[in-house]
Figure 1 (spheres, rainbow, N blue to C red):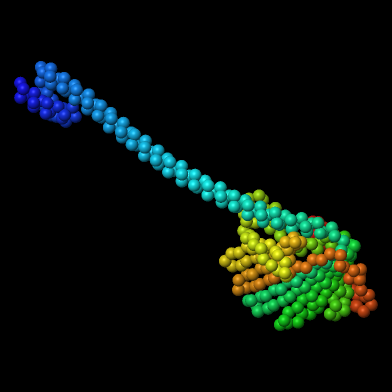
Figure 2 (figure 1 turned 30 degrees about the horizontal axis):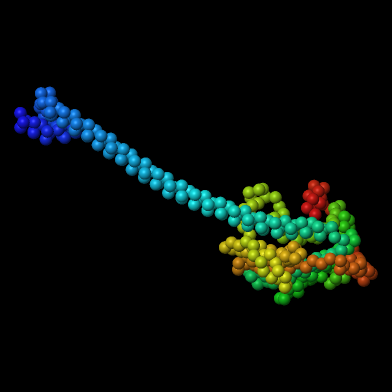
Amino acid sequence: MKKECEIVKDLFPSYIAGILSEESEKFIQAHINECQECRNLLEKMSENSENSKLESEDKIEYNHLKKYRRKMVILKSVLFSILIVIIAIITIFIAKYNYSNNIMEQVISKIEEYKKSDNYSIKKVEHRIDYERNNEFTFTKVYYYKDGKYKKESLAESPNQKFLNSTMYDYGEINSNQRIEITEDIKTANIETSNFTYVKEGQFFNLLLDEVQLYNTNFGFFSGIFMRMGYQVRTDRYNGKECYVFKIQDDTSYTEKWIDKESMMIVRAIQDVYNKSYTEISYFVSFDNVTEEQVAVPNLQDYNVENSEKSMEEEMVEIYNKNL
C-alpha cells in the first residue's frame, strides 16, 4: 500500500491540474477513497494550489493596475503639457491681437477727430514703379481746407515722359454740388454743376482711413481677427520719427503701413508686388496753416472758362453720398 501511496502522491500535482488520463484519475480517486492520509494530503495540496492561483491572479491584476496607473500618469502629463502650450499660444495670440488692434483703434479715432478741424492741409506723394513696362511716376496731391472752402492741387511727373495737363486744381465748398476745375497747363477753367455733393466735411481724411481699411471694416468677428492677425508689428524710424510698422507678406508681395507714434497718423504706405510693381505713398498732415488766399478761386480772366453739368442716376447718387 505504501508503494501505491508514493505513486499517487507523485501524481497529485497533475491530478490537481487536471491533465491526467481518465484511467489515472480513476486510479487516484479509488486510492484516496481508501487512504485517509493521501486524501488529507490531496486536500491540503488543492488548497495551496487554489491559494497560489488566487495570489497569482491578484499579482497579475495588481501589475495590470500598476501599468494602467503609470500610463494614466504619463497621459495626464502629456495632456497637461499640451493644454499649457495651447493656453500659451492663445495668450500670445490675444496679446498680439490686442496690441495691434489698440494701435489701429487710436489711429482711426484720431482721424475721426481730425475730420472736425476747420483748417488743415493733407499732402499725398505717391511714387510708383512699373517694372513690367519700365515706367516710373510720381503723383502729388495736396488738399487745402479752411472754414468750409477747399482746394485740391494735383501734379503728375515722370522722369522718362512728359504728361499733358499735368497740373490741375479743384476749388469748391463743402456740401456743394458745384466746383471749379482749372487746368493750369492750358489755362482752362471748367465750372461744373452736378446733382450730387462733391465734398463733405472731413472727407479728405478718408485718404488716411483707406490705408487702415482692414481695421476699419466689419468683416465679421472671426474673419476680422484672422485677417488682422496677418500683420506683423514692429517699430522703426521714418523722417526722424519713431513709427509703428504694420507689415503683411506672402510669396508674391508685401504691404506696410507706417504710423507716427506721436501723432498716431499714417505717414507712409508701401506695396511691393515682386518683379511687377512698387508703390510708396507718403502723407504729410498739418493744421492751422492754410490761408484764405490758398483756398480762394483765382481771377478767371486769364482762363478759357467753360460751364458743364454732370449727373448720375438717383440710385448711384445715394450710394455715392453714403461713401463720401
